[in-house]
Image (tube, rainbow, N blue to C red; front, side):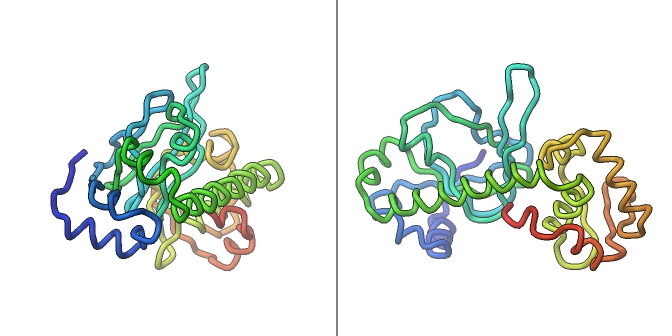
Length: 228
């Protein structure tokens, strides 16, 4: 992790995401812009959390590791979000582990300063309510979709959600991570990939996916993983 001393970069992020409408000036002054490299750990579950984080750019993986050693993928962040609402409001240990999937920029603010200036600051409290509500809705939808939709549809929606410009994408997540995210097994995931290939919807070459039939992929995907 590298702390960037360039205040102009931090100010640009603050302006872009209107953090000065959420936080009092005293917290903007002590905020730090940090860059985490791909694969670097940002938070570890069940440890003391010392900072509140605003995610600016890159990609994060949020997950839990259970007593049997298996990890449960909770969510990916690929757009502006925050880390620490539950821990800050309830004064508990870190609830999830977070790792940078790509090089990622985050703004961090010490919890001690947050407690001093933000705990009774209405704009920040309104932000926390909105943020937690959105995450609750996303988690509920995610769980429901994983129970109700066939694996092929879930995989189609996952691919569609990660498809950028053009009709090809590079899988940056492991097959194990993808299977955990869409709530299936490694074997069923491979079977779903094969089904999409057999139907001429995709062509998979190692970790590169080319979508040959975008319309069919869209029809299969529906709106399952709209919130990512």
